[in-house]
Image (cartoon, rainbow, N blue to C red; front, side):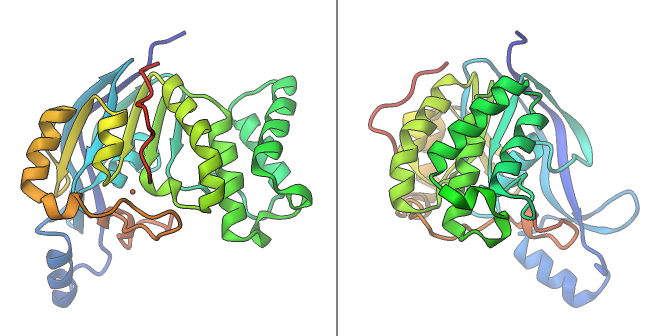
Length: 290
């Protein structure tokens, strides 16, 4: 089996702003994006969501992403997952990858829950016997009963979270990308789901996690990348970078962790007009590297 690898080479991600020549819009965007306004080769006004990122992850790495809201954490995760394409540079991925970013990501709301399970299995190239086991595992864990055979569009938000979580954690990847707000769901269900998630983290060769919680970072990560205005401010051992980051932004980072069920503030990149609508409690013991 190929050893897991992530190589980010000179990556910049730009979001065009249509009608960006309007003076009022320019002023608004400059304020919101903290000076991250630029132009691309087609002379369009763009938000520079990520700027000139270079780093490499190999098997055994556990990377935590920290930074203020709008720093580019979620944009980076989505770029690693292949949702966003770099305007400059490239991302190289070796090994199977699973992205726990949004519970409904990749689901067809017009299909039934069961059909979505089969679709996910086929997308991952599972043979028929494994498709059957996948269906049984997801059905048992999600506990949707007869709703599993109804269209996902009629599900409650909690039901979508349960199906999405069960689906996303049923197939064990070599590379695991996770955004903290993936864990924002029904408290009772997430208590049940925590052991399943920890097992997945232990089994992954590479973990990339975006979170505001220092406890999660200390428990799960060996390395931290501090993003600021779309650039890498510091990259190194978790304790070293966390100490520097805490000293820089203690009030923000020491705020209570995201409550289960709370809304997440996305990075500006995810809110840019050019893109379609497309950070929990730490475990008692850190899961070892897989």
